[in-house]
Image (tube, rainbow, N blue to C red; front, side, top):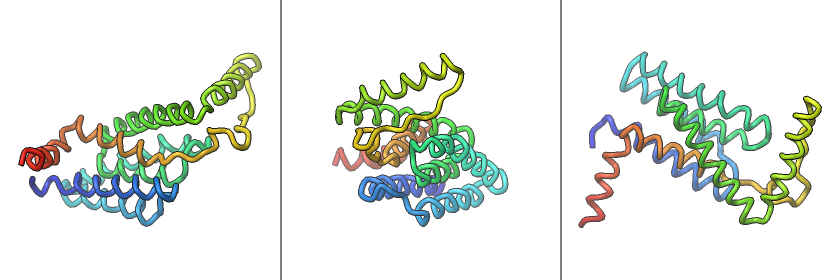
Length: 189
């Protein structure tokens, strides 16, 4: 473990805190997301100077811009968007793009799994199938919201998906390896 591992350690702490808070409260406080983004940018700058700051900003805006449409469609909350932006500030470019993709994939799989477990997957597919059919036949349709009580109206702690996507990114880029070695040394004791 070296000083270079500090940003990854801080990011891991942020992801754990976000997952716990989102699971319990279904909201991510600004104190967590904004502080995390500032820490990410500060650590990028402290370790890499101006180029680190620019890289952190590129990662921040990648997470922000790519998750904003999901917020606009009401598929996730503003806290999830801010968390993904904060994660991007730690990862920089292009790792933030990978984290967005992996988080979106993890969230999609989890959402479909939860819908299936709650018995609401067919209602969801019918609703979106109807909207797609309308779009292709007429060239435009309005969003059809779920009916009250449908499984798709229940909240899902998306910080878990962001955490999984971010962890997978850290594994992919090798930044999690020192932490896994430490964990392995405890397991072998």
